[in-house]
Amino acid sequence: MKKGLALFTAAMMMFGLAACGQNEDAQQTTGDATVTETEAAEETKAAADDSKDDGERTTFTVGFDAEFPPYGFMDESGDYVGFDLDLAQEVCERQGWELKKQPINWDTKDMELSSGSIDCIWNGFTMNGREDAYTWSVPYVDNSQVFVVAEDSGIATKADLAGKVVGVQADSSALAALEDEESQENLDLAASFSALNQFADYNTAFMELEAGSIDALAMDIGVANYQLNQREGYTILTGENEEEYLATEQYAIGFLLGNDELKDTVESTLMEMVDDGTFAEITEKYADYGLVDAVCLGK
Image 1 (cartoon, one colour):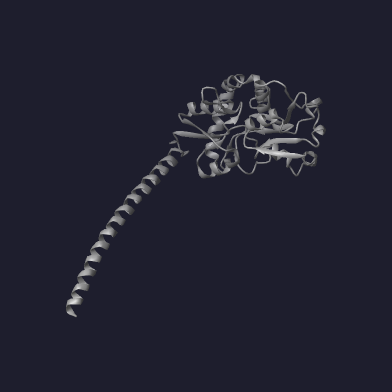
Image 2 (cartoon, helix red, strand yellow):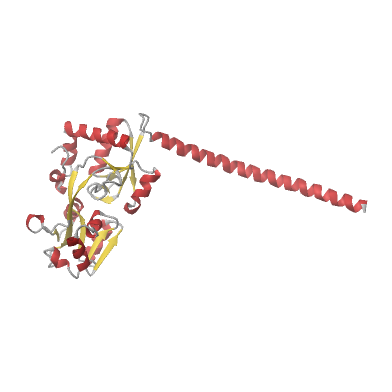
C-alpha cells in the first residue's frame, strides 16, 4: 500500500513538473503576446501624439475619394492628385506638417473620421444638410448636382427621365438630393425612375452609362465636367437658367464634430492662401473643369 502510494506520489510530482513546464511555456507565450500588444499600443499612442493640435502636430491625414476628379484622383503616374489635395498640400507646407493622403470608401467616411484614421474629409464634401454632423470650415466651392446623359439619348429635361434607369454614387450628395424629404419635387422625380442604381464610384457608374445599362447619371457638376472632358458624346442637362439641375450646394472641409482647434488652424491657413493669391493659382490649374467659376472663397 505504501509502495503504491509512493509510486502515485512520484507520478503526481512528475506530472506537476511537466505541468509547470507547460505553464512556463504558456507564460512565455503570453509574455511575448503582451510585449507585442504593448508595442502596438505604444505605436498607436505615438500616432495619436503626432496628431495633437497643441503645436506638436507633425502629420495631417486627409480622407478622400480617390475616384472623384478633379478634387481627388489617381493620375497616369499612379500618384494621388487633385484640387483639394493641392490645397491640403499647401496648408501642410505652411504649417510644417507632412500630408498623408488617405483614400477611403465614401460610405465609411464617418467611421474613418471617428476612429482617428483621418483628420478630416477634404474631397468635394457637401456641407448642406450635414451642418450639425461635423465641424466645418468655411465653404470654398459652390457646387450643383446634375444629370449626365448621352447626347443621342433623347433625354433633354428631368421630366424625360421618367421610366428611365438612373445611376448615382452610394452615400453621395446626388443621392441625398433625390431622397431629400424636404423636396417633394426631387422625391417625385426619383419615384418616376424605373430604377435608381447605386455604385461605389463614378468611374464604374460611367462605364455602366457607356454600356447602356443606365440611361442617366446624377452627380456633382465638377466631376461631370471632368468626365465629359475625357470622353465624347455626353452632355449635362441644363435647360434654361440651370432649371434642370438636381440641386445646388457648397463644399467645405469636414472635421470631427468638436475639433474646432484643427479646423481653425487649417481654415486660417486657407484664408492666408486666398489673401496672397495662392488659392487662385491652384484654382487656375483646374480651369478646364469649371472650378474658376465654382469657387466662392475670396469672392
